[in-house]
Length: 253
Image (cartoon, rainbow, N blue to C red; front, side):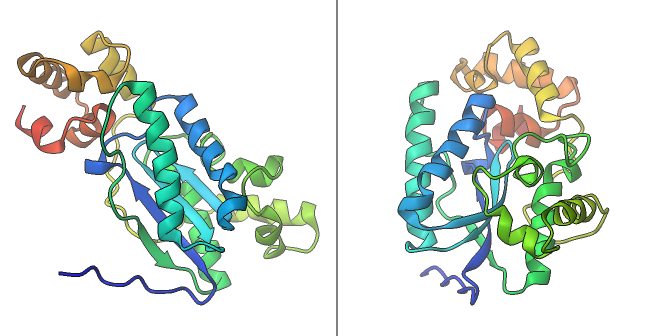
């Protein structure tokens, strides 16, 4: 059956989610996050897109992005190839890292644009990965407070006020408001532990320097480690996401 054509945005702006294959982790340390951000910045001029907000989660990416000279499908193929080539080289792996098709939703009004902006910045906080919106280091929230790096913050701040200082103040207030915003649902789980804490437990239990190395263990040893992690009350989804072992294997262990 042919894939359904994506709905085109009259504004050219979309909320996009790109996630790891089988929901596995796509970032393991700070260098990985920085690399993806560097790739996003390097391809901006070539592809012509504008980014208004981003959030890099452990196993997926949120972007509020405006399509430019190139179709977003081609943009994400470029970004994916560049990051996966580097990631596979770094971790001595091969094969796919991202799901084949990104998810996207049309953003066709200023009101919904701001809703998505807040949703993206609050994503790690609502997922239990950080203590506050301001504390998460891998979202674009800080760009609006500290200055531009990747995002077109001027356009966003202009929606709040013509005065920059006033706009930043209003942006901070807006971003911290508790809400029930629902945008491009991504089957988030209620995480019992922040991922960084869970990763420390995985390393301690397995004796391995990297949670992803559990994939290379002999089958019996891998199952034993997974059972110990379950005993530590890590969720099945969190174990699968951080180690790259499939959800089904973790569930059966």
